[in-house]
Length: 277
Image (cartoon, rainbow, N blue to C red; front, top):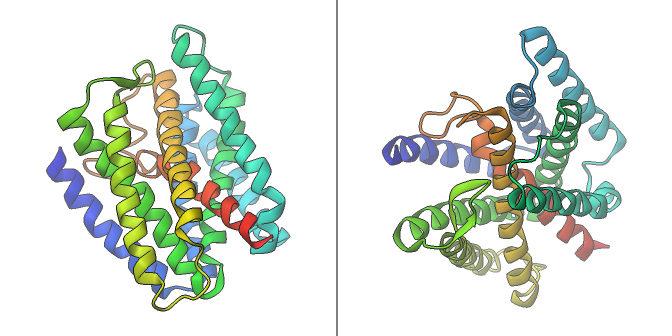
């Protein structure tokens, strides 16, 4: 399983980072929209929709939402200031849902209509976060790469630290494999990666926030990435499946690969919108 994960993740990460640094924001927005639609297809299945017509209609709604957000200017730096606080509140609300279900795991799942509606908002916010991060002018590729490093570092560090030192379960009712030791290991690796990258970036970028801002924000993004991961785990638990799909060997579906980004990207974009305000 680990070998399959690595053989899938490394080439995809290398290709993604190449595109981040070479493609204009418009092209990346289109690429991220395609990924979002694939994720929407999986979300529809996890939420109880059956059959191609129903799922196709759902991804059409998600696609229309993304187009509307682009046309409205919500994917710009100026537009981000309008949705930054609601986006943070959205993920705080999801955290409350996770806490409620972790304490009473036998309670009934949320209705399919609520899960489907939540999918539209969640996927739209994630897309907005990714596009806004990349659209920050010359700093855009840096911040989007930093976001990926935080999420990937938290995931990889959490996996290995959890296997080696994991004792205390983080949220056993939601994801039995996650531990507090793994979360701390993931945070440590994520901070090392992003601080090293920020140091390198300081040689060609002049307006990067200082370490006093970067460290707490990085920690918040890592925490958000864990919440995103747990939220998808709860969705899969309600659906009674292990993976959201089978498109990525060793990882499962697209949602399984981007679950941490669902929260991490909009939270980092919101933090930067606050700095720019």
